[in-house]
Image (cartoon, rainbow, N blue to C red; front, side):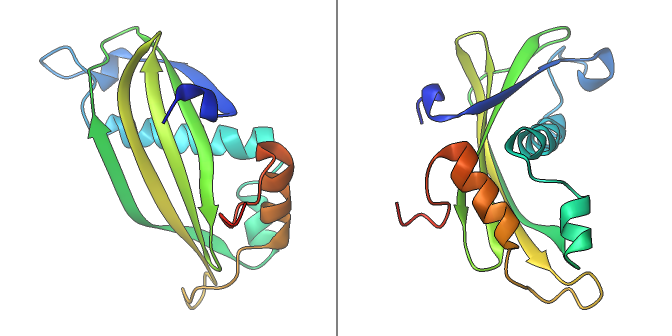
Length: 146
């Protein structure tokens, strides 16, 4: 996906503790970068996370992840974690991510969450305030029905 299709990117710096003996970011840390990007995306879009969900009596549970590695980041690199909500279904939210260092596309992937009742962990409809915030922020219908 062209980087321009992401309305939001969050910059972070690779810390020493995140690189391995090969002096590259250990692969599992990219999920942490995705998580930071998701939180910052929600903040920028006006989605109160996590309190908006908990106040609605729900919470998000990760059900799927995918990472595709195209390059490596190293200590002290400045990375742009680009995030968008690709689709909101009845009870699921699919985030898409790309990580770039300058013009180099290093990682792409997605996280899928299910919105559920925390007590029963049964899927429930994604709150309307999330759908509306994405409509305003992304300028499109998050259900994918553009």
